[in-house]
Image (cartoon, rainbow, N blue to C red; front, side, top):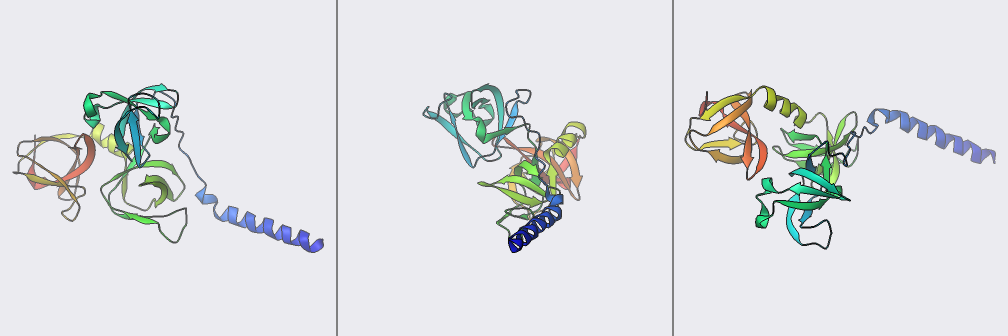
Length: 244
């Protein structure tokens, strides 16, 4: 009996040590209120979710939406959101549709990955579960002291806070307070997902196209680019632009 008690005390001490060692990794979940219509914007947190004509899983499917896609929420019907389909190109003439609220997060914050980074299954893990390329937005599900918990592909993953990112709240500050009107001066100016030609090319802009500059990064300007209805952060050479 004494041996059992001694072993039990040892287990308790070990658990206490582990708890203290991981205290700095305590989860800090954002105060998301997914049923408060004070927020009318949301982002998809499912790899592939269906938008339907009625708030019923057996109702006709209008289209699919994907991880990170922006949606405007008009109303709540039970466990469903009524969303505006204008930014999706009004598929099949539909202006609104229904999506299960479980697949959407409102009052959200996202991060934009400026450089590629490894992701991990949990805080402090030695072995990574994947690698994310630069130039993409990811929804923040929560955070610890040293990690962002993001919705990456089909699962939650831990992204080190040492990764080079912009938070959407930071970008919104620049976008709303420090924009500069400009016009593209070069013919068929190439634009990239980061400040350099080694980043992925996301499109081209014709000469005399008007853009709003957010900030400069070396020899590059950053701005919000309309990529088939979705706003993405893009970069263009300073030499290809003329400020108004």
